[in-house]
Length: 343
Figure (cartoon, rainbow, N blue to C red):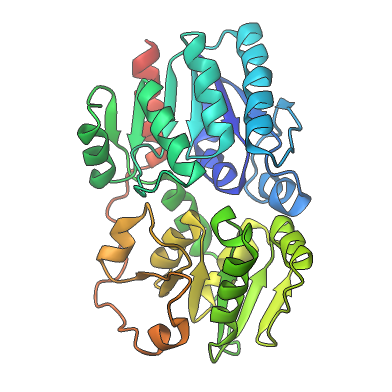
């Protein structure tokens, strides 16, 4: 069995870590990095820390313009697929890399495996939402992280090839988290913020910085290169309680979550990691695709006009805590089902 796997950003590097290892026990995998995250701290460090095989191909596509980036990715991936003629292709999540892979693969009638399928924020102004929907509708196997995702697909008329495999990112998290020590530190909030909805508009970005600057707690923020450029462009002053650091590798990221008092983020992956670590999460968005974390009380949606300081002070710690539900390896389940599809 020959599989082409498309990856391009941090969450995808994490998800592929154990799945790739499982594939390579018996089959051939061609790992393709689109270049979407090209900064060393956003890319290379994850391959080193998680012991992921170096990508066979790096397309090096770093344009920030969505149309140009996606178009070049489709062209590059199509060339690879025509040359390699794989039995199937794996795409993860909801990035431009995901969409480009699914378009290129579907045009060549290559079975597409979408890992982390079925998620919906129900906001089509988000580019990620468009990427998810289109990818799901051309995929052959759709591995969902929870039953809500399956319901979303069923509501759109997708029933065939839909499976609840659990969250492969959770499997990687648990493997790393249990080996990181809990250290005694001064209380701090751990923050990430990079999404276009928060950083492209100067007024929104300024509101977000003001929200976080008003809380009575130091905030550690590993700043994304793109967000850093926007702060400079809009001449926004960082409040004294926000401490900027360089982007972190996976192990450092999990360590900072584990030793924090709370998490503030607009990242989908970090919302889940906060819940798994038992940390209150305040999500700087108007909606989230991870509705289960909101429903159980560990995650709170924060709109730009909300008083974050007041919400944090009144936050009730939920009684329901995270417990790993099974010892089943999500990566083994996924690869087993892919082998069944090809055979």
